[in-house]
Image 1 (cartoon, rainbow, N blue to C red):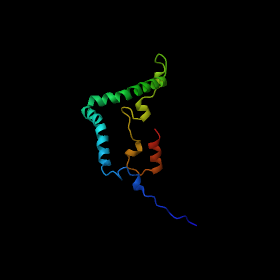
Image 2 (image 1 turned 90 degrees about the vertical axis):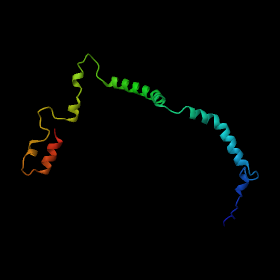
Image 3 (image 1 turned 135 degrees about the vertical axis):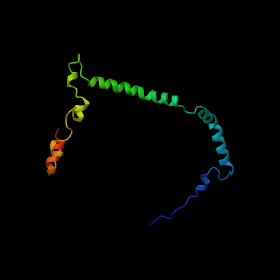
Image 4 (image 1 turned 120 degrees about the vertical axis):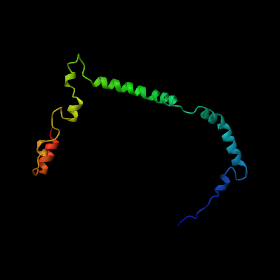
Length: 124
């Protein structure tokens, strides 16, 4: 058995229900109290220097933390560990001067097996 549905008039909860000028006065009061803050924000328009300084306050400590983390990962010692570091060319497998960047069989006119070509391109 369903209960009869009661509708509650919500208009009585509106502060402007009995007072027609309430919302206009409310808007004037809120905007009047916000006026000094809004004027200050208009006077302090962001400049390039201001934006750089605000970013600098956040980025510089993070950059310093990144430097400390990178220094902890680098090998310690008087340079003997630096020979173990790989250069960009070794990491990217870039051909050195005088080396041909393509396998030799790609320079011929003969029919090439697809799997052989993929294998040759994947292996250094």
